[in-house]
Length: 143
Image (cartoon, rainbow, N blue to C red; front, side, top):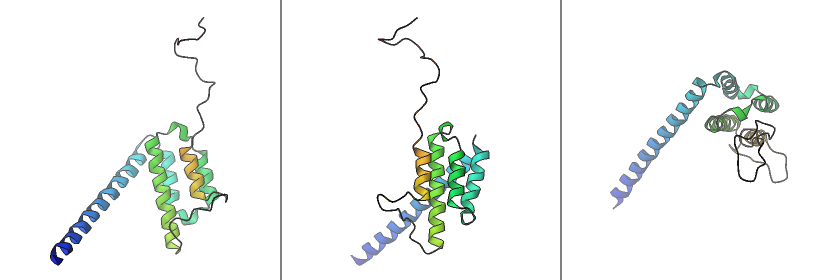
């Protein structure tokens, strides 16, 4: 019975390693697709900042990210950017012997990652002062 459990553990580890490689390959493909897509010019600069995060102040990163028109960028691209910033911040913290994730307590100010996550995911509601209604709908006054 001991052999089976040892073999099972080895199989499980091999399966985990295979899934981890697939996960890394998926994110590498997403990263490459973003840098080859329509927002490559802007996002390549942002990804360069992630790669050199130790030289970038949190306020600089937040300011750059806040200046991007995220409403015009598709959600999948925004998720890829969020993953990349998470990976960069985690690497930065681990290199300095800090816990990889250290969210502030409730009521405390948001940290840089939380501010960036809000910028990327909580877009303002679309403006009502856009184009006129596209067609008649029940109960509307039509001219």
